[in-house]
Length: 229
Image (cartoon, rainbow, N blue to C red; front, side, top):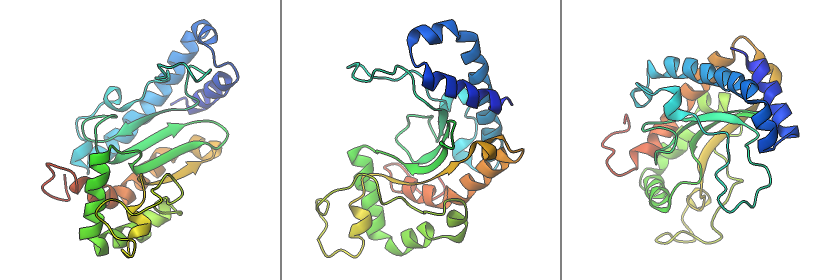
């Protein structure tokens, strides 16, 4: 893998984020994309061996476009500053919890596990699962392996309701969690960590550590008949 080249390309793109520059450096982009594709391929191959949700997925199924989807053209930068993928059953845009890899220079490379900005019906289902199975939820979110790889645990700093969700009371003991609009844990990697020989090992181990919590969220969704789906 050429992860060093990928990081350097993304740094250059951040400083020259225009369609004209990209057109002039298309071969560089393709080389950087190939490096990210190989990273994702290696991770998929490893995690699919133990997670049936991720079996048979290809990098094409899970990798995100670099071009921003800003139809209103409010963002002056046409390209994202990161390159990455969303690993989950059904591919990157499937309405499920999963794992998200982003490669970005200057210590902004990131791994996320869970569901970020879910649709209202998915959010309602997860809240109900937490309400019905509170003990299991807290056991999983505080699991030693999860916290080993995601030291900050489930993120509570993101968007959330100011009032209890519809159907829940202000004195609900899990209100802190029920008010969340996103359910995920994340961690950043330094450039040195991305370039280390064991980077794929670290990603695979972190995904394995987060899988019980991700499975908990997915078990709440319509059509799920067990925690193993």
